[in-house]
Amino acid sequence: MEEKKPLLVVLGAAESGVGAAILAKQKGWEVFVSDFGKIKDYFKATLTELNIPFEEGAHTEETILKADCVVKSPGISDKVAIVKAIRKQGIEICSEIEFGFRYKAAGKIIAITGSNGKSTTTTLTYEILEKAGYDVALVGNIGYSFAKRIAEKPAAWYVMEISSFQLDDTHLFKPDVAIILNITPDHLDRYDYNFSNYVASKFRIAANQQKEDFLLLNKDDKAIKEYLQNFNIESKIIYFTMEDQTNFFEGGMADSEQLHLNINGDPMDTSIHDLALKGKHNQYNCMAAGISAKIVGVRNEKIREVFTTFKSLEHRLEFVAKVRGVTFINDSKATNLNSVWYALECLPGPIILIMGGLDKGNDYSEIRQLVQQKVKAIICLGKDNRIIHEAFERIIPTIIDTYTASDAVLAAYAYADRGDTVLLSPACASFDLFNNYEDRGEQFKVAVKNL
Figure (tube, rainbow, N blue to C red):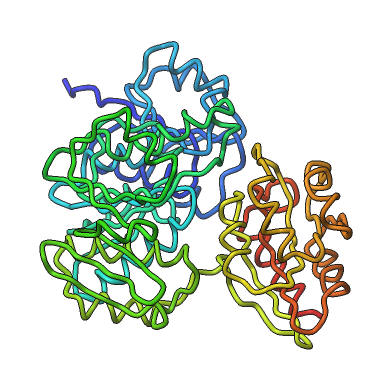
């Protein structure tokens, strides 16, 4: 008599969910995929080809509650009825990165989290290792399934971007090198508007690390410093800083002229002016990527080469065009206030700021001083802009409501003078008017090119 296979139910049939289903099928699980929305044709075709049963437009509780384990999409909240039912039944819920970790074999992991800079640092780290000849894969929240890569083409190293949502359902997951870039209020609607819950979620990246593992931390980040006062970390902590320039022995430090790295007594210096990525926030990103590469064993020359040639990511402070002396910048990926702060900090004024969307509990006082210094007009791009009006109407005389990317660009251009910068840096999620931040950024770019 054939032994009954364990049942894995996957909630959410996008990149991470389908990746988990592929790996589970390969490893001998019975698999069922359930998506409350509509599944894209590409993913349907993949599931059909592998004979993996699926449903869309519903969650059939009778089938789902028979699961031995549930892999939940990071976008599905614990407050959803089916998730509550699964937890009540005592069925294990894990994230796709957790499920993949259990099958990664000898592969090693560099995992990057933080409120801002994750995608840039992850891509930068990956490119350094890749250019240095390492067998490396780029996976995680950046858009490539960790589980799928393990199933189809295992690598010696995985460089992984991880969100707090992905970390929430990890149990055994343990990176060899973990990085926390910064922690500022974001997604507070998912964490009962409690910042401490969000901070604790980020630190789950180090929860299972041991003394042979590394944890890279931003020494200048207030939330990180406060967390460390109350919790013990088992792994070796290595700091990167711009503020503490007197006690630098190991890790990363940047001053007004040089970026310094020192790991295992092997120092490396790079001129700030030679970095391809500009702005103080990118100096932090470079330090984190450089330290992790040096831990892995990449030579200084290769790290320096990538630092000076790296191209910035799409939708992250992306130059779009200069139209009659007005510069247009696409920062659609800036879905929280800290990202907007960084954008305003590193761009010259005057700025016409396009912002708005689905607010996630923002406290706009955090950027008020920079807005007052550099912003001459705010163009709101969202269905409900009352909070932005209330936050800035006393300091910014011109605040305009728009409801399409085209109208936002036209309004911004009308208020711009030669030498000004029009910056799309929304501080909010995009789902009220757009499919995602990429869609918002693409529509912005099309509108600029139509001027």
